Length: 101
Image: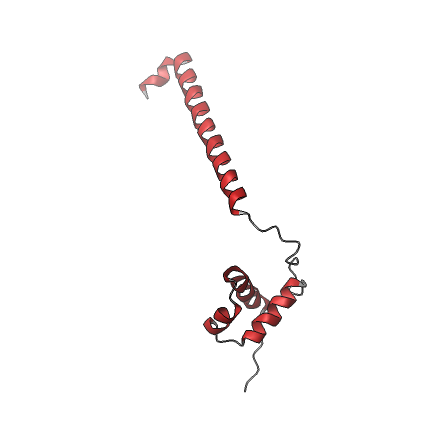
């Protein structure tokens, strides 16, 4: 059997997919790799051998926190839209010649 040499980018892609799905065997079948190879790459990734930060140092996104942040950003965007509308109204009020445009 021929031995393959995989790039770190490919390994990272496979490992991240395996961690996201939580099913290393399924990812191994998808890429036609040995599941033991995926387990080894995952372990190496967690130890930081791919030049990335270790899994313990990565700040995983909490869906509830993300939803709360999204709501706050929507609120801020709405406030900025209102502020822009008010400022445009004031400009037009002080400069009536701009109303024609």
